[in-house]
Image (cartoon, rainbow, N blue to C red; front, side, top):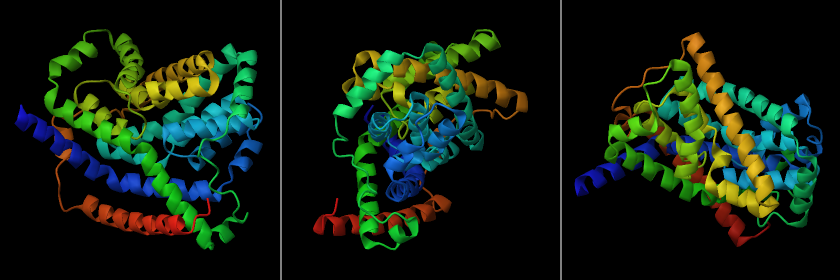
Length: 367
């Protein structure tokens, strides 16, 4: 048993090593965007629930944070400043599932088909979400939630671009802006390190310690193909709810699930279930009360299931669903001198530079 635990920790460490460069570069990019794009400007363009505003919200999502919990805080600020509900929810989805590191992790752990599905499926997800909101729109509940959001501050999550020059070129030439970028980079890691640690530890433990029979019991295989797709898509968010892993920690576990027979639809739905996990529901309950939090959770669950089914169908028709390979996760966890090694060296250098800017900001606070 001790040997198995050691193996699971080794696999967890290997999976993190495989993904570190994508995380570091992704958080660096997110930090840069957060400093360059004022949140006030984002809110100003999201006041209507139209196609233009919703599409813009998805694109501007990475201007918030790739951390689900920080995105929820930014979403609350946008709602308080007048953003419509559909663009606000599209912003939340874009902040996590359209961040570069999410697609990179999907590619690393699952393959390019999943990375493509995560990006393309975002359209399906938001379309299902928008349709569900339009069919069920609780006007009084939304206005009450907007009032609740307006009463509270960002609790330490102030806009990193505040007080800086407006033109982005002047910001990039500003030492103060780079200190902000370094500080935001450290803040990103501070917000997600527990989620990452838990996610990679769970992935390593499940890959080594959990027998195949457990997966076969949770994810049935002896159903008709159509029913099988629906059931697996439904179980994706359920599993996300039980594992309490957000967007930054669910990639390696998704690879374990894929290797053990979970269908394409279930994996996509699992990856999209960031705002269904218990911590996200708890945060929304604190912001808006349990009724609106439950409404948001139900809409995000339905859209994750719908997007999983749609992407499974589309990729099956195109012949793009790959075949899972036994032992692929443990192969990923091997330490080698390859492209990952050199990308990680570059990521360590970038992290060191941004940590230096963070340290300079601690010595000369300006936030």
